[in-house]
Length: 245
Image (cartoon, rainbow, N blue to C red; front, side):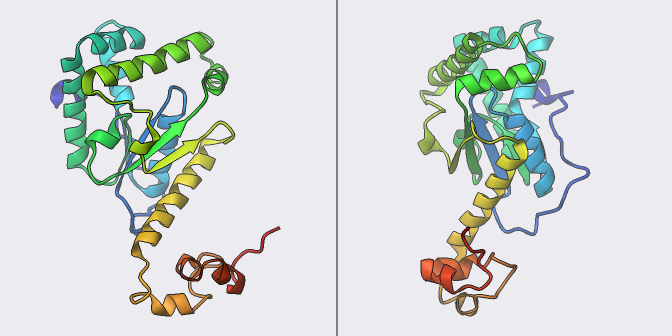
Protein backbone atom coordinates (compact mmCIF):
# COMPACT_ATOMS: atom_id res chain seq x y z
CA UNK A 1 0.00 0.00 0.00
CA UNK A 2 2.72 2.47 0.97
CA UNK A 3 4.72 1.97 -2.20
CA UNK A 4 1.84 3.02 -4.44
CA UNK A 5 -0.08 5.53 -2.36
CA UNK A 6 2.66 7.16 -0.28
CA UNK A 7 2.81 10.90 -0.88
CA UNK A 8 0.07 10.87 -3.50
CA UNK A 9 -2.50 13.65 -3.35
CA UNK A 10 -5.33 11.36 -4.30
CA UNK A 11 -8.26 12.26 -2.05
CA UNK A 12 -10.36 15.34 -2.62
CA UNK A 13 -13.80 16.53 -1.63
CA UNK A 14 -13.55 16.70 2.18
CA UNK A 15 -14.39 20.38 2.38
CA UNK A 16 -16.97 22.79 0.94
CA UNK A 17 -19.37 20.06 0.00
CA UNK A 18 -23.08 19.46 0.23
CA UNK A 19 -23.96 16.50 2.41
CA UNK A 20 -26.21 14.05 0.56
CA UNK A 21 -25.35 11.03 2.69
CA UNK A 22 -28.94 10.84 3.85
CA UNK A 23 -29.79 9.72 0.30
CA UNK A 24 -30.23 5.96 0.43
CA UNK A 25 -28.12 4.77 -2.49
CA UNK A 26 -24.77 3.24 -3.37
CA UNK A 27 -21.93 4.66 -1.29
CA UNK A 28 -19.25 3.80 -3.87
CA UNK A 29 -19.26 5.06 -7.45
CA UNK A 30 -16.67 4.17 -10.08
CA UNK A 31 -16.08 6.25 -13.20
CA UNK A 32 -14.56 4.63 -16.25
CA UNK A 33 -14.25 6.08 -19.71
CA UNK A 34 -12.13 6.81 -22.73
CA UNK A 35 -9.32 9.36 -22.90
CA UNK A 36 -10.46 12.95 -22.27
CA UNK A 37 -13.94 11.92 -21.17
CA UNK A 38 -13.49 14.07 -18.06
CA UNK A 39 -13.54 11.34 -15.42
CA UNK A 40 -11.45 13.28 -12.91
CA UNK A 41 -13.34 16.56 -13.36
CA UNK A 42 -16.72 14.85 -13.14
CA UNK A 43 -15.52 12.70 -10.26
CA UNK A 44 -14.37 15.61 -8.12
CA UNK A 45 -17.60 17.52 -8.71
CA UNK A 46 -19.76 14.47 -8.07
CA UNK A 47 -17.89 13.70 -4.84
CA UNK A 48 -18.28 17.26 -3.61
CA UNK A 49 -22.02 17.29 -4.24
CA UNK A 50 -22.60 13.92 -2.61
CA UNK A 51 -20.32 14.60 0.33
CA UNK A 52 -18.06 11.72 -0.72
CA UNK A 53 -14.28 11.54 -1.13
CA UNK A 54 -12.63 11.39 -4.54
CA UNK A 55 -9.74 9.12 -5.49
CA UNK A 56 -8.07 8.71 -8.87
CA UNK A 57 -5.88 5.83 -9.99
CA UNK A 58 -4.84 7.93 -12.98
CA UNK A 59 -3.32 10.61 -10.76
CA UNK A 60 -1.37 8.02 -8.80
CA UNK A 61 -0.08 6.35 -11.96
CA UNK A 62 1.03 9.71 -13.40
CA UNK A 63 2.96 10.45 -10.20
CA UNK A 64 4.58 7.02 -10.32
CA UNK A 65 5.55 7.50 -13.98
CA UNK A 66 7.17 10.83 -13.10
CA UNK A 67 9.13 9.23 -10.25
CA UNK A 68 10.47 6.67 -12.74
CA UNK A 69 11.31 9.41 -15.26
CA UNK A 70 8.74 8.20 -17.80
CA UNK A 71 5.92 9.96 -19.61
CA UNK A 72 2.46 8.43 -19.28
CA UNK A 73 2.56 6.60 -22.64
CA UNK A 74 5.95 5.03 -21.88
CA UNK A 75 4.68 3.92 -18.47
CA UNK A 76 1.57 2.43 -20.08
CA UNK A 77 3.85 0.55 -22.48
CA UNK A 78 5.81 -0.74 -19.51
CA UNK A 79 2.60 -2.01 -17.88
CA UNK A 80 1.45 -3.57 -21.15
CA UNK A 81 4.69 -5.50 -21.40
CA UNK A 82 4.61 -6.45 -17.73
CA UNK A 83 1.10 -7.61 -16.70
CA UNK A 84 2.37 -8.44 -13.20
CA UNK A 85 3.11 -4.74 -12.60
CA UNK A 86 -0.39 -3.85 -13.78
CA UNK A 87 -1.91 -6.46 -11.46
CA UNK A 88 0.10 -5.23 -8.48
CA UNK A 89 -1.14 -1.67 -9.00
CA UNK A 90 -4.76 -2.78 -9.32
CA UNK A 91 -4.55 -5.05 -6.28
CA UNK A 92 -3.13 -2.29 -4.10
CA UNK A 93 -5.53 0.37 -5.29
CA UNK A 94 -8.67 -1.79 -5.19
CA UNK A 95 -7.84 -3.08 -1.69
CA UNK A 96 -7.67 0.49 -0.46
CA UNK A 97 -10.97 1.43 -2.15
CA UNK A 98 -12.84 -1.67 -1.02
CA UNK A 99 -11.84 -0.97 2.57
CA UNK A 100 -13.33 2.54 2.39
CA UNK A 101 -16.79 4.00 1.99
CA UNK A 102 -18.50 7.06 0.48
CA UNK A 103 -16.03 7.16 -2.39
CA UNK A 104 -16.10 8.34 -6.00
CA UNK A 105 -13.31 6.59 -7.91
CA UNK A 106 -11.73 7.48 -11.23
CA UNK A 107 -10.90 3.88 -12.08
CA UNK A 108 -11.29 2.28 -15.48
CA UNK A 109 -11.41 -1.24 -14.04
CA UNK A 110 -13.63 -0.36 -11.11
CA UNK A 111 -16.40 -2.58 -12.48
CA UNK A 112 -14.10 -5.59 -12.03
CA UNK A 113 -12.41 -4.83 -8.72
CA UNK A 114 -14.75 -2.66 -6.64
CA UNK A 115 -17.54 -4.52 -4.87
CA UNK A 116 -21.05 -3.18 -4.25
CA UNK A 117 -20.57 -0.01 -6.31
CA UNK A 118 -22.46 1.90 -9.00
CA UNK A 119 -20.34 1.68 -12.15
CA UNK A 120 -20.47 4.50 -14.73
CA UNK A 121 -18.84 4.68 -18.17
CA UNK A 122 -18.26 8.03 -19.92
CA UNK A 123 -18.22 7.52 -23.68
CA UNK A 124 -16.72 10.17 -25.97
CA UNK A 125 -15.74 10.27 -29.63
CA UNK A 126 -12.06 10.74 -30.35
CA UNK A 127 -12.84 13.89 -32.35
CA UNK A 128 -14.60 15.46 -29.37
CA UNK A 129 -11.81 14.26 -27.07
CA UNK A 130 -9.18 16.11 -29.13
CA UNK A 131 -11.35 19.22 -29.12
CA UNK A 132 -11.64 19.13 -25.33
CA UNK A 133 -7.92 18.60 -24.82
CA UNK A 134 -7.02 21.56 -27.02
CA UNK A 135 -9.41 23.77 -25.06
CA UNK A 136 -7.60 22.59 -21.93
CA UNK A 137 -4.32 24.00 -23.36
CA UNK A 138 -2.88 20.63 -24.31
CA UNK A 139 -2.00 21.35 -27.97
CA UNK A 140 0.34 18.34 -28.15
CA UNK A 141 -2.71 16.07 -28.05
CA UNK A 142 -3.90 15.05 -31.51
CA UNK A 143 -6.33 12.54 -32.95
CA UNK A 144 -3.35 10.17 -33.30
CA UNK A 145 -2.23 10.47 -29.66
CA UNK A 146 -5.78 10.11 -28.31
CA UNK A 147 -6.43 7.06 -30.48
CA UNK A 148 -3.06 5.63 -29.47
CA UNK A 149 -3.78 6.05 -25.75
CA UNK A 150 -7.21 4.45 -26.11
CA UNK A 151 -5.61 1.49 -27.87
CA UNK A 152 -3.01 1.27 -25.11
CA UNK A 153 -5.64 0.98 -22.41
CA UNK A 154 -7.60 -1.69 -24.27
CA UNK A 155 -4.47 -3.71 -25.03
CA UNK A 156 -3.13 -3.29 -21.50
CA UNK A 157 -6.28 -4.65 -19.86
CA UNK A 158 -6.69 -7.45 -22.38
CA UNK A 159 -3.11 -8.53 -21.73
CA UNK A 160 -3.47 -8.37 -17.95
CA UNK A 161 -7.03 -9.64 -17.47
CA UNK A 162 -8.46 -10.72 -20.81
CA UNK A 163 -11.23 -8.10 -20.67
CA UNK A 164 -12.36 -5.19 -22.84
CA UNK A 165 -13.16 -2.34 -20.46
CA UNK A 166 -15.16 -0.48 -23.14
CA UNK A 167 -17.94 -3.10 -23.29
CA UNK A 168 -21.08 -1.31 -22.12
CA UNK A 169 -22.44 -4.46 -20.49
CA UNK A 170 -19.89 -4.03 -17.68
CA UNK A 171 -21.60 -0.89 -16.39
CA UNK A 172 -24.73 0.21 -14.56
CA UNK A 173 -24.83 3.47 -16.51
CA UNK A 174 -23.28 4.50 -19.85
CA UNK A 175 -23.33 8.21 -20.74
CA UNK A 176 -22.62 9.48 -24.25
CA UNK A 177 -21.16 12.87 -23.40
CA UNK A 178 -20.38 14.40 -26.81
CA UNK A 179 -23.44 16.67 -26.62
CA UNK A 180 -23.16 17.48 -22.91
CA UNK A 181 -21.70 20.93 -22.49
CA UNK A 182 -20.55 20.99 -18.86
CA UNK A 183 -19.32 18.57 -16.18
CA UNK A 184 -22.23 19.71 -14.00
CA UNK A 185 -24.68 18.44 -16.59
CA UNK A 186 -23.05 15.01 -16.43
CA UNK A 187 -23.03 15.05 -12.62
CA UNK A 188 -26.71 15.99 -12.49
CA UNK A 189 -27.54 13.08 -14.78
CA UNK A 190 -25.56 10.60 -12.68
CA UNK A 191 -27.23 11.73 -9.45
CA UNK A 192 -30.67 11.51 -11.05
CA UNK A 193 -29.99 7.98 -12.27
CA UNK A 194 -28.68 6.95 -8.85
CA UNK A 195 -31.88 8.13 -7.21
CA UNK A 196 -34.09 6.50 -9.84
CA UNK A 197 -32.22 3.21 -9.54
CA UNK A 198 -32.66 3.18 -5.79
CA UNK A 199 -36.31 4.20 -6.04
CA UNK A 200 -37.09 1.45 -8.51
CA UNK A 201 -35.50 -1.13 -6.26
CA UNK A 202 -37.40 -0.01 -3.20
CA UNK A 203 -40.92 0.36 -4.55
CA UNK A 204 -43.29 -2.27 -3.26
CA UNK A 205 -47.06 -1.61 -3.47
CA UNK A 206 -47.60 -3.28 -0.11
CA UNK A 207 -44.96 -1.22 1.67
CA UNK A 208 -45.70 2.07 -0.09
CA UNK A 209 -49.46 1.96 -0.47
CA UNK A 210 -50.01 5.38 1.09
CA UNK A 211 -47.43 7.02 -1.18
CA UNK A 212 -48.83 5.32 -4.27
CA UNK A 213 -52.32 6.56 -3.51
CA UNK A 214 -51.17 10.11 -2.79
CA UNK A 215 -50.03 11.99 -5.90
CA UNK A 216 -49.13 15.01 -3.75
CA UNK A 217 -46.65 13.12 -1.57
CA UNK A 218 -43.12 14.54 -1.66
CA UNK A 219 -41.65 17.54 -3.44
CA UNK A 220 -43.21 19.05 -6.51
CA UNK A 221 -43.05 16.70 -9.47
CA UNK A 222 -40.94 14.10 -7.65
CA UNK A 223 -43.41 11.45 -6.49
CA UNK A 224 -41.65 8.71 -8.42
CA UNK A 225 -43.38 6.00 -6.43
CA UNK A 226 -46.78 7.29 -7.54
CA UNK A 227 -45.72 7.72 -11.15
CA UNK A 228 -43.98 4.37 -11.36
CA UNK A 229 -46.85 2.43 -9.85
CA UNK A 230 -49.45 4.15 -12.01
CA UNK A 231 -47.44 4.41 -15.23
CA UNK A 232 -48.46 7.15 -17.67
CA UNK A 233 -51.80 7.38 -15.94
CA UNK A 234 -50.01 8.39 -12.75
CA UNK A 235 -48.25 11.22 -14.55
CA UNK A 236 -51.51 12.45 -16.01
CA UNK A 237 -53.30 12.35 -12.67
CA UNK A 238 -50.48 13.85 -10.62
CA UNK A 239 -51.09 17.61 -10.28
CA UNK A 240 -47.48 18.07 -9.29
CA UNK A 241 -46.12 16.44 -12.44
CA UNK A 242 -44.62 19.10 -14.65
CA UNK A 243 -46.56 19.36 -17.90
CA UNK A 244 -44.85 18.62 -21.16
CA UNK A 245 -44.20 21.70 -23.25
